[in-house]
Every structure is written in C-alpha cells, then in structure tokens.
Length: 558
Image (cartoon, rainbow, N blue to C red; front, side, top):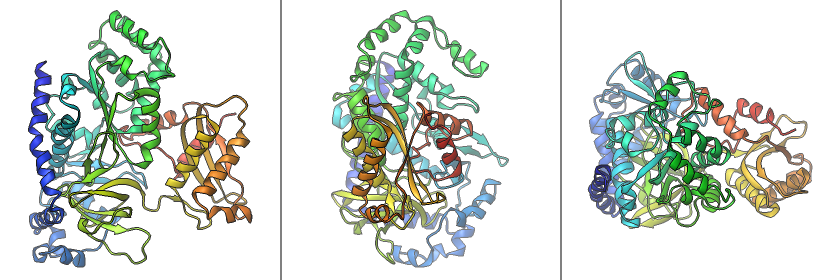
C-alpha cells in the first residue's frame, strides 16, 4: 500500500467515530436540533440582527418561530451587501472571509456567507464520515487508488478581501484533505480550480484516462458524471492519441499558459494508450468503465428523482453491475441537510447537526412549519433552514419527500423545487410528471435520449407545451409526429387534468422540437464561459428564462 493509500485508510478509520456519532444522534434528533439552534442564537445574540429579534430572550424552538419571520434572500440582501463590503457583526459574529456563489436556479447568483462551522460540517461528512461509511459497506480497497473528482470551483477576490465563488473553491483549501488533493485525484489544479475563460472537460478526461488505478469517481450531480463519460465516448480516439504521444490536440481550446503548464505534467505513454485501445476495441455499446479502470469500485454523486435518468443510463450503459453508486445527501451553499445512507440506494438520512431545519408541509392550506420529529412517511415538505452563516428561517425552495426512518430520524429524497411546475391553465404539470412522460416515451418508442426540457409557451396563439429532446439514436422509421403524439399521451397519463385542456382546445397540441447533437453540452459550455461553476450547473429540464428559451429554439435540428 502506498503512503497516500495508508493515509486514506487512516482517515476512513478516523471517520468511524462520526458514523457512531450520527447513529447516536438519530435516536434523539430533536434534542440535537434544539442544541444547534440555541448555540446559533447565543453565538449571534449581540449582532445587529440578533438584537433586532431578541436572540438572547429566545429559549425554545416555539419562541424562535414566533419571533422570527420566514425570509427569502431579498430580505437578507441589504445585510449581506454590507458584509460583502467588510462590515462585521451584522448577521453573524464571525468575520466572514468567503461568500458562496449560488447556481442561480431561480434567478441571479447570490452571495451566501460561508462560516467556519458550515465548512467544518461539510468536511466532516464529505471526507471523514463518507470514507468510513463507504468502507463499512465495501471494504477499504478503494483507498489504494486515485479518485476522479469532477468537483471544481473558482473564486474572485472582493474589495473587502473576502473571496466569492463556488464553495468547492474553499473546501479544497480548508477542508480535511486540503494538503493532499493533488495526490488524491487524477485532475490537476488547472481543472480543480480553473481560471476564467476556458473549459476543463478535456483536462479531466485526459488525466483520468492516463491513470490506471482509479478506484472511485465523484461529481456533484450524476448529469455531470454522465457528461464526463459522454465526452470520452465521443473523443476517446483523440484522447488516446494524445496520451500515446504526450501531446495536446491542436483542436483543444485552452489558453497557451494552461497548455504549457499541462505539458510539463505529461509525457508519452504508449503502454497506457495500448491498454485503452484494447478497452475500447469492442465499442461502447456495452458497459466499458471497468475495462478502462479495472479497479473502479464506486461513484459518489447526488441522488433523487431529478437525477435518476442520468444515473440509470450510467449504470446500464457504462458502469455495469460491478460498480456501486453511493448517493450524496441534500446539501447547498446555505446549509447541510443529509448524508448518504446505504450503498446503491438513493434515500439519504437527515443530519441533526448539519443546521437547524424546519419543514413546511406541501399541499396543505395555511400549513405551519414543523420540526424533524413530526415528519411523516410519504409526505413532501419544503425545507426552511437556519444555518451557521447568518440566514435565519431561510426559505430554500427545496422540497424533500420522506421515504422512511432510521431510528427516529427521517430518510429523505430530493423531490423538486417549490413552484417548479409548468403551468398554463392552472394544471400545474410537475417536474415529476414531465420526467415520467419523457422516460415512458423513450421506453415505448425505443430511442436513446440524451436530455430533455419543457417550456410552457403562454405567448402562443393557443398556449401549449414545447418539449425539447436531444436524441442519441432513434429506430429507423421513427418520425417526429409519432414521438410528439406519444409524449402528449404520456403527459396526460402523468397529469390527468391535462386531458380536458387538450380536449377542449384550452391548450394546443404539444409541440416537439428535436435538438441538434450536443446541444446540452454546448449550453453548459456557454454557461461556464459566462462565469457559472461547472460543479453547480443543473439540467434545464424546465425552461425558466428567456436565455434558455432562445438558446434551445436556436439549436433546433433542421
């Protein structure tokens, strides 16, 4: 075993105490939650916000809920703006040195204060608890190799001296593994913490293929890992040729300084190139990941219904049955909510010490927030958090579903975003309904889907749904009208309220737009070049803004 492998195994051993700690917390989650809330209020009682709401006078969850309103980002924006400029003691006592840049799913990117306590929680669960938990289920063999880590982030320095960017840009520098990331992962610094103005896809794939002894792959979302695999499938001949010769293909668009730095880290490797050619000799129609990396044991990524299409395709077409999937829990720039629970199962377990959480029941009129101990199986709740960075009773818009319990603590899956539904005539077609309709259509008509989006076109003469599909393959003779009609039929099955609207002409027939190859990959490239973090970009299954609409319509297959 290498020195790095020994250190990884030791860290997994150290993480065992956090596995035991979480197990203990699951038996009294409300007690832990109460302690978390009281500690946050006590720590910040002398801040401007703490004095305004009398933190020092609050001694119970009930008092807290009565005193403080539920808020959204705009309510905190004036306070955060002052913190960004360097002012202290506004929302939190701690001097904030980094602000997380969110993905901006529902609007413009935000500045989310990152506290040391939140950083510590993420480090504890992502690094130590994660390693121990995985080792308990598949053994320690994975510690003997390198990982492919597709989490990346860049940060800019603000006028106050604080940094602003993806949380991952800080985690690598301040987390438990800060001194070892270069030896743990295949990707060089140019991909893990990229500068502005270039894409990292070639760098990640090139260095990953160079490494024989890969034992795990991790990425924020399974759609990102799927894109990593897709790039390899489309470009493996070019990548292998570069590995053989120790070159960077002239068509790869990277800044000269980045190319020069990468070339100092690579050398001709004809032996590895020969192995890779043999691995791809039989094509990519059957699972091939284990042929490329014989010691690959698992991937680590976010679970939940929204990402199941990408995970399912990966397992069926690329990973095969021998590679496990560990699903990360639900977490965000604002707070840490849950961690993985069992190998190859997507539910995660709420973490009582991640932050203070309240839950707003869905589909109930005049519902009030409840605590973790009152959640019920098979019901959905919107998460309201109080984190460590100065957001109190903050509305996340994330909706989770309770799928079971471990001891007294709920097991959850991410369901959707609150208000995230296509709606033209009050029919509220949910993300789940659209996903079901698209996947059932794919199954019935036997085409190979890359990705999809739906756009509720309220400006059409008769409002209608526009469904965008990017296809990898379709059976010979399968025409667009057959796909369109099947999509509409499956949408009605998924949301029975649509039958009346289509039947009475309140909605025009569904419109189908087939997209050019690699449309969604190009969308990600454009967003990254515009400054978005590659690790935070989610699929655009529901078109939410004018840029997305124009982009997709502009890439219709002719």
